[in-house]
Length: 436
Image 1: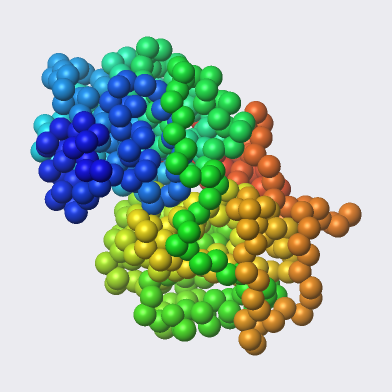
Image 2 (image 1 turned 180 degrees about the vertical axis):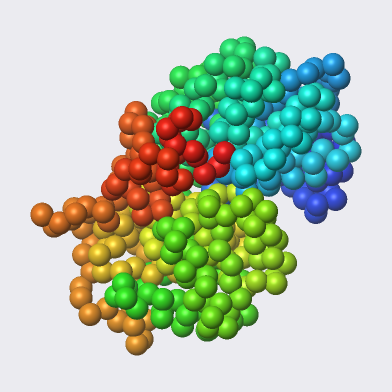
């Protein structure tokens, strides 16, 4: 089925051809006609299956067919959870819409407000933004959302999780009630879906694969290891895979820096990327990694979504994520667009409950293989309930959207951040979000 059969205009088809795309993916086949028809859409598919193009292409066409050069506010608002995803979505819009004259802009925290204010003042067709920075502009009076015709939440499961929910509600109060609303993500928990349906109108639900699944082209392995030997095991794997680009996920920003420094000292060029890095440093690290100048990128879950690295062969979980759904997003960085990929997890003996939670989510058992020379000295617990009297810091938590202040990932699920600390996602005035 060619893209023309979906009703896309020649200018968009030509841009797709320039990128080497000739046939739509499953999510695009179902979502594009529904969006062109003006329906609300709740779309779910595995990462790397073309979700961004699934909503970008039809909104570009709808804008081109009904131009409004006098509009001072954006006609399409796209909200995303991270700076990296904001940049990637905006880049895709520019590439797919290069043969169409539209005004676009991207805004996120960690960058100067002035260029963003200038772009807003000139009028926009499409605005891509992180919630915190958009609220900054709304409170300053430099952003107006009364002309929004289409609202899109990308990575909607995280956007509607507790940390972003207050910000989303503030923004929803500023956009017209009569609008088209699109929500896309790789994972949709039932409570998250219920929240989404509260502000959508009879949405068309598009789920092209089982929820919370990963690409079948990814091979999964878990190496049990004592916590104190994780770093040595990581270096062993990196030395064996010296020709590959490798993305390494860790749970905290401090550990992310430390692991990158230790890897570099051992002769393997590595960089770190996390929420405390400046936007310039994060973009440079990504550029160096994509170009091959740096072979290893150490990251927190800030990189679990929105990074499109072509043909990335290997993802390593130095720490398992505290929320099992985040495993889906981490592993989604490899095995994209039908390519083969590999996921290796280093599992300490007290992380067995987290591994079991991931197995249950995926409905499959990840192969547990001890690496010769790094066999654990104690047996791994694979139950989900920690022993009585011991802290539950490694128990896989359930998402509870109604409770504010929840933190997922980064190893902080069992403790509340101090007021003013940079780690959490709380409403403005209590704590600064890392994505502002």
